[in-house]
Length: 317
Figure (cartoon, rainbow, N blue to C red):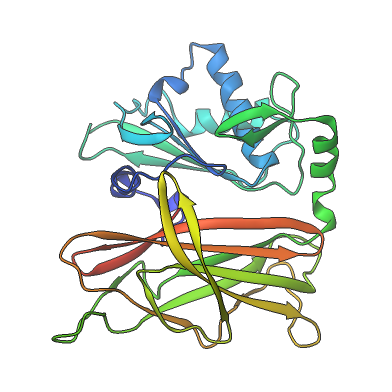
């Protein structure tokens, strides 16, 4: 699995091929959204980036065409001598108060579709110094694919964000892609190890928390460690509804260690092992996680496990 700041042109193409829809944490923008000569574009940039930081964080891809919130193609791209990474960084830092820490901007060269041009991926963390005010002196949030003004009580709630833990989970393989192997006359692959880790970005430790993992029903969970199967559910990712199996576990002291800031550890021991059905075409499978803890809102994130030419990789949604 790649983080957004490591994406290349082929990863953007994968988002398009898989129809990964815009969401609370993902937005696509055409090239016209960045224009040095149009002051309204600078205001929009300030509004959109601050909205992500004030909400759950996320990724804005500048240079992708979308229709009805679905990516349909890579746009013409930017001349890197005109719209530069430094210009983007300068506008973000100068037009948003307070400054947002750890915004990352990735310049992606278009080697296939339009050489000598680039697109940009802006990764915005959920900010611990929120709320952040846009250039028009308004506080924004993400809501229904848009950047919307925040209510007064929402501004106060975000200002108190650091009072509780901020847990996140992550799926990953041992390497970015893994080989899928099948035994002769077997309809399922050999077991694939899926790693899951938890982190806390807040100074407040998580003393009690509930972790849930959702696996596409088409996948076979061979080993779930100490996680218990709960039920079959429906998970919506973009326009596609996946049937998934839910596994969960409750953690509390003294049986489990608190999750402190900066600590990263496995939540399933032994690790999950899954098997992929034998198919003759490329396939995509749903994965997701949720986490609850005292002092924080429930956090839910989805991912797609893609299989192509007997190679599997995980793509965050």
